Structures are given as structure tokens and as C-alpha cells.
Amino acid sequence: MDFSFSPEEEQFRQDLREWLRQNLPSGWGSTFRAPKGRERIAFLRDWQRKLHSGGYLGLSWPKEYGGRGASMIEMAIFNEEMARVEAPGPLNVLGLGMAGPTIIVHGTEEQKQQHLNKILNCEEIWCQGFSEPGSGSDVASIRTRAELHGDEFVVNGQKVWTSLAQIADWCMLLVRTDPDAPKHRGISYILVDMKSPGITVRPLQQMTGESEFNEVFFEDVHVPRANLVGELNNGWGVALTTLMNERGTASFGTQARFKIIYDNLVGLANDTLRDGRPATQDPQIRQQLAQHRIDVEILKLNCFRNFTRLLRGGTPGPEGSILKLWWSELNQRMQDTAMLVQGPFGQLLRESPWAMEGGRWQYNFLRSKANTIEAGTSEIQRNIIAERVLHMPKGR
Image (cartoon, rainbow, N blue to C red; front, side, top):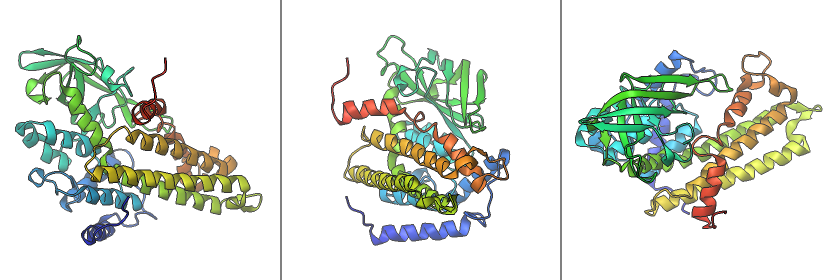
């Protein structure tokens, strides 16, 4: 692994740091408080447009489609620096990271002209219609069907865990168009206007009290055949492009975020008294903090190894399951330690005036429980690692 960067890449980093310093809201990281509800949506939309005007959106997209044509290393630096200052992400994250790159690779020229610029300037918000009840980690087992009638598909079925569906304008939707084909075949990838008649979106409330995800119902929804991406019944290959872009160079940001979480956890332990002494002097907590530091370093080295492989011409493969399994379970372990450090105060939520650090650790503790489910359960990740990385035989 090569940990060094060229002078040009370091200059890109310094330019980005200066841009963030000038453009993040005043008091960011200290006194600034992000708005909630509709005001938060407006805040993130404005932030995305600011990133776009600064030339830091669609970095890896070809210049002819409004991007910067940035290298993979520049993308990795961008993700790392955004994580370092805990900058907000763009609102249209699924459009930028998944729908746009997929349309660039597989879309028609008409689809590119219709959608790409609107994705960049946040005129179109996108959601991803892949998971279904009974088809989560095993995406290829989807049952939402689309029947072709002349120049239109008629879609019926249900999707679930659909982030941003409540505000989305468009959906990248996987549908079954040949029910008699093997499950990885007979699937098509279509773009659906979320304002089409027959679409019902129902938010799902989580234990945090928020509704990040939704279930979406399609009842005789008419979609033009011109919205098909790639070939009919060959949507699985298109979907793989979407899923590869979901991970891509994001690992640099992941390892940077986890270093910040660890540093904040140590700060919490230093500022919290147990038996009249800082919690960092408690042998049990010291042992857990030491283990977390080791685990964060393991995450960093695996991220660099994965990224080095991509730079050498590889493509995202099953090794990505190692990173997903590691960070999701590591986050849960660190949040458990945060609850241990706080003792009885760990029971207080954000609404309580006595909650430590505004109750953010309690929120993160609850939210972390989803980490080992979303983007592929830990059980599925272990199966992938065993079968496709370690080449172990399948169980009988």
C-alpha cells in the first residue's frame, strides 16, 4: 500500500480545505445547530447547490455531463476531508452516487440530457427502489413486476427501506419483467417519476423517532418504455453498476469518520467521572478504548488495501463485505462503550436537559442498531466472505 499523495493531490486537498473553511456555516462544529424538518431539507438543498457551484459535486463524472473528471484519489481525498470536518452531505446523495453514475454508463443520450444536470443542481431528488419485504440482502429475489403493454410498463408491487422516497422526484426501480426466468435474469431497471398516479409512500418511524425510510406501493403505475435503462430483462447487470457506485471510494470517508467517533468517545470518557475519577482511568473502559483504537486502525488499513486494489485496475468485489461487516459492528461496540461510560445518564434522550452532550450518544446508540441490517445484514456479509473471499464450501 502506498500512503503518499502527489503534490497535485495535496494541492487539491488544501484547496478543498480552504473552500470548506469559507463556505461551511458560521459556527460549524461548535455553536452551529443544524435545522430540523422541512428547514433541514432546504438547508441541505442549498448546501448541495453551493457544492455544485464550487465544483465539488459530481467530481468523478465526465466533464461533458457537468462533472469534474476527477481521479479516484481526488474522490477519496474529498470524502476524507468532508468526514474530517463532519461536513453535511448533499441532499441528493442517491442521485449523485448511484442514479447519475448508472445513467452515465447505461443510459440513453436522452436519459442523460433529461436527468444528469437536474441531479447535480438538486432539481431532481432520487430514491432507490431495490429492497422489498422478503428481498433485502437477496435483491435478486424481487417480486415487484412490470408488464410491458405497447410503449408502457405497468408496475405493481411494494418496496421497503426506501430512503428519501417521501421527498423524491424520481426512483431507480428494479422490477421483474420475466417471471419465468432464473432470479438474476428477467429483471429490468427502469426510471420512475414518483409523481405518477398509483404510487403511495408511507414513512417508517424508527426507534430514534425519525422516519429516514419508507415503504412504497405501486398499483398499476404506468412508466414509458423510454425509461428503461439498459436492455429488457438484463437489469441485474445495470443494478450491479449502481451497487458498485454505492461503495466506490467512500471507504476513505468511512475510516476518517470512525477516527472522529473514537476521538470523541475518548473525550467523553475523559470528561465523565466514575468513582470520582475520569472514566479513562477505569480499567474496564481503558481496555475497551484500547480495543476500539486497534479496531479503528484495522478499518483504516483495510480501507487503504481495498482502495489500492481499485487503483491498480481492480473493480469493487466481495472483499467490500469485510469493510461493511467490520464498520457496522465496530460502530455498535463503540456506541455500547459510550453508554457504559455515561452510566445512568445513558438512559436520557436528547429531549432531556440533563442528557450528556445533548444526548447525541444515545441517538447514535439507537441508530447504530440498523447498521448490521442496512446495506446487507451481517449474516449475509459473513456468507459472502466465507464463500466468495475464503472459497469455503457451502453448508448442507
